[in-house]
Length: 571
Figure (tube, rainbow, N blue to C red):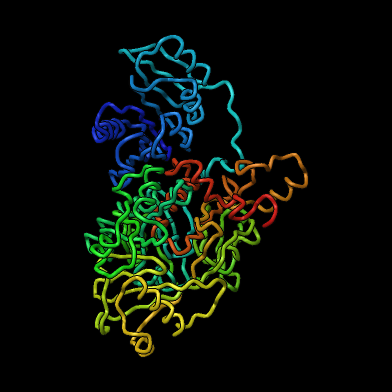
């Protein structure tokens, strides 16, 4: 590959050797290449979900998807591959060859065992020029006679300086800076508060867990992938003392199922019990130490984290790499494009605060206000939530040994205080801590088995609490990627000459002439979603491989009907 390129992407379909050994060999080869790019990303069917070396200069990623044959897994992969490595276990079927054609970057190379004439013909029909076989292998290079133009949604990413403004220093913004840094991009993170995680992300704790549905849904698949990534990243941070939390398990109480029904649902989906399993009421009592009324789902790689600590840890990774800086007490009132095409953040007097070629809106409820002149609005709703914090010395308090939820949730902080809640009130802008909401939270905590004084005594309890607003979407999935280019969409619709019948064809604020992105709508599940969502964002911005299959990426797309109805209503 040529020098100066951001990354080399290798799709390693070999499965006969240990993944760690294969990565070590590829790592050594990459380091020895004087023309190597700045990063090596290895995509594989096996091994860990992700693994970084050399400060994320070398990254190992599993091809998204949990099951299915090679062709099926590759159909969900979104990447530009520079080098394909195959072994004798891979059968080069017509479907697989078409998949390699779709994934191949310009001048990609392929190495496979020596193949017969029919397979070489298949490679040729899919744009690969087969060179003379050497040492028992077939080597080919991608040189198609013609290439289809990229759809509107997948224009080449920004080609200039790798710099971004990230607006918002909560979970979405801090995670965005972290993920961009992993791809070699620098970010200036702006926030109206003096420090990161001072608004809703400043709660003392919050749940982190996956979900389960039968049949398996996009919602469940997203939170499964997101929770497993977050657990893997957060465990070392917890062990080091940098992040408060406990990921030794989580119980979701469920009174609509019994053990037989739960077993049938689990068998239908086929998930391992290392991810989720049913526990009886007795087992739930053992895990939580509470007199819970029912059984439920037990998630092993789950629990709770301090969202503020998690924000600061993510941002610190980017700062320590020299690829991020925080600029507080900076409220952005508007965005504009400079004559040179840079995005400029302006204050309320129209004065320049900062500028960069790319901007990421990660500021929750303020996203639509800043999008309005440039892109289609998103279906975001502000939902007020009030938490209740019980002192450790509350008379009769039974702190849960493990985080749990049902109607409401409860978790025990390291100092013995119990956090419970939270209320959910749409479009309620009252920032005061309300006694009625404390009573609501305490009543639900009692239903979870958290021992409390009787109702009369609760009115005089010394409780504390906090109010924040979550930006939610109708389907409770985040919204991540380039929003719809309002002007281009209107022009295309009026002309009738441009296809607008799918996400791929909708004009976006993306590519060399745009560079506007959103990472929002994390709702009440931001701790779980932030890291994986930020990796999806970074793939959109930088052109790196997407960490999720295409169906999940599309479910988060700002152009989707559930997010902004780019095909009519929101425009």
